[in-house]
Image (tube, rainbow, N blue to C red):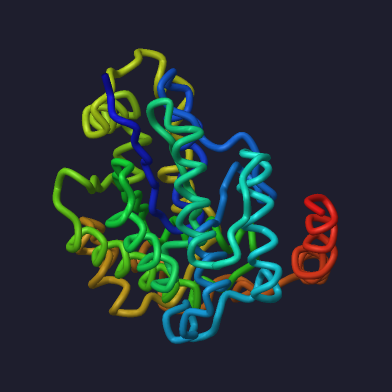
Length: 308
């Protein structure tokens, strides 16, 4: 019999976490949450918790507390809604840290039948959230394993620019922060608790990679896993109209993961600014402003009413 496990995927945004989750959760023994107020069944639990517990701003990306919840009160509202949306009879404790740890244990026990899978790519770039998650992993009686998923940083910046309108020249430092944290996590955990995967390997041979992950989690591989993965996205950034000023620190860290982006600069990331420098269009700016108002003002009010 397989012990109950929580498998947590650690990755940057635009690194294939949704595709990886989709394939992993096709396994008959793996489940993610049934409900989340966020997209793609992401709980964002540890980032919300770091905000709620008022972790020092210096431990967050950019040196300020994550702003997208609006307040500590809203962060708590999102936490309670995620937990009670999956376990309605959960009694919310008065102590906030007790809520963070016990609430997450409740979710793990509900969905670890026998394996609970979680991915929230917002978390990795914030050491406040990562360190809190590691503290829980040491205390819980649940068997916790971590999978790190890394993608070529040039491909990540290209994808983020196209979807979010962010400047590759500035966002490359977010990638550095996230992967530095990932290396720290890897160094703090035994090999039996951490597995590193490259997105390009996953796309090139999804069945083989997922077989290795199943072995890591100690569950049998199922032949249908990976069947829907295609390799179109691996080289796509090279054919796009994409350029950026790559900082030498990005080259150094990328090399630690096996990405020799220094030799790719002349062809795919020429020294210069990306087209438009990632500037937000009027439409994107309006959408970003609207989403911020919804997530920090309207949605928390509605969620509080939901659980009154």
